[in-house]
Length: 435
Image 1 (cartoon, rainbow, N blue to C red):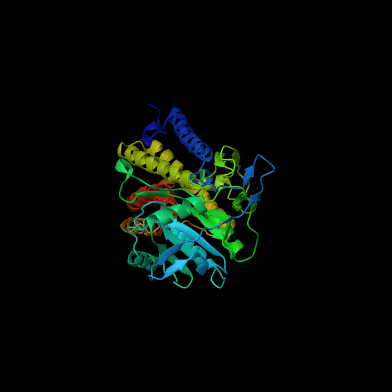
Image 2 (spheres, rainbow, N blue to C red):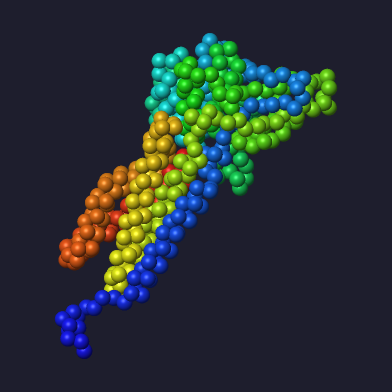
């Protein structure tokens, strides 16, 4: 035995262990980059649900005109009768919901609430019409309106005869509304209807349509209502001058190119005018880039990867594989740093393009309370993770083993909780709530 070997009972690890560490680290980082590339290549829902745009007629002899809302008589939550004539004289905005809805209706109503707040002092009225008037009585709508602090002088909630309301939506606004039947009629999903918000001018003509679930569209509408810009070409609501009224057709799905056939006139019922809906680009300065809308999915992937790495690091240290544990935890810290960069980029980008730095969870009752509880605890603990993780890594790298162990017992569960809840928050906000 060499003379100095007994002086060093822990000889250096063989070089092949470092090669294994580099291999493991390279595979993990490759997973990170693959996850990011996959997410960036995925089309987000918000891009799939762009509002229908200008209607262009292939026959140049048919003119495009604005469509006028048909006469109606409905009942406000105050039990006052509201007609089309009562709304003339100033612009108004209308959306369609039902109070028992558990999907997009809370988001749509919240978007209307935020729009009304942005337009305070503007001479415009807001109108919400229920598609489920049999259950949404004036009293029910009154309670629903109170949840959103709706000013009765500015924001009306209307109910009435179901046939009249559905005919108004289909034949005047040319939007989809359908009552589900049989096995498709689930609690909270009784009706399928449009998520579009319609802008009507002071004469009763429909001048624009905007997707309530798209914050960029709603921010644009706010500027239009305040007179800061004209209705964008991509949001104008134009139809053939010869389009019959009423017309029992369903509006095409948002963001598609679809032909709709209609009889041109009663004199020639067999003559058909083909209408094509084409997408128009939103102004580049106001369109949220796809890579920004994909960042929440990227962030969730990074949180998920950090969770797996944390669990792997825990298993490795329990098995006494110190070098592999060290490489895994350093990789985990690197993933968390990348996450922080993506997280800040997303929220700064959202603020720049939409004026809102974050998405709000819709009012889904108890589910929203659960979401807020998770979110608040996640945010509070996330503040401590960089400090705790940094100290834990520092003590480990400087061989202060006892201090490393003590602080690791605190750092590990907090870091793991923040990573896991990061994924849960994404699923609840962007998948469950559909925001």
